[in-house]
Length: 191
Ligand SMILES: Cc1cc2nc3c(=O)[nH]c(=O)nc-3n(C[C@H](O)[C@H](O)[C@H](O)COP(=O)(O)O)c2cc1C
Image (tube, rainbow, N blue to C red; front, side, top):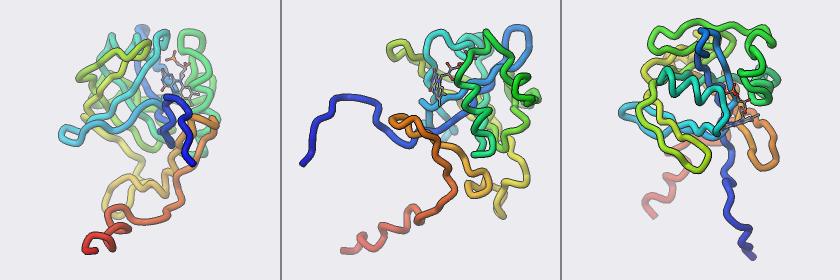
């Protein structure tokens, strides 16, 4: 028996992106972001949704650039903290002892401790209620060599990226492979 439970953003898992931007004084800010995802392939694009009051939103509108830093379970406490306090009240990177390096491609920081960083330039935006959905074109990607697979691509098993269950508010680790996409369903193609 199915039941109508009312509208809501019951989508899981959502990603756990750490968005990096530069403050006006040149220091780096980071925030945890779950409302985002891939939205284009040619050119490669991601979308992120930023509520009002986020320092990140101000920074992004000023510089037009951001990074998406992706890390694993080993960075969970720091990543969570980046979502608990605004950069207008704390220097979050300094608090946790993390560092950043200026991106070669955009005016935004690459967070050194995260194994994978997408360097993005804002190409479009749209207000959705209090949120601003920003579309960023991925103009560069930096990745720690030790998390690359034998084809030179980021290896999910090595990164063990964190996802979020936005309903139970739990973090989920993505390192357990249960099947192969574009293969598991093939048995039904000729039925
Ligand atoms: C798990 C998690 C996910 C979050 N997702 C979002 C999000 O998608 N959009 C958003 O605007 N804020 C989100 N937040 C809240 C921001 O990370 C938080 O308000 C942060 O302090 C903003 O930092 P800033 O002011 O330095 O930009 C999330 C927080 C957590 C802990």
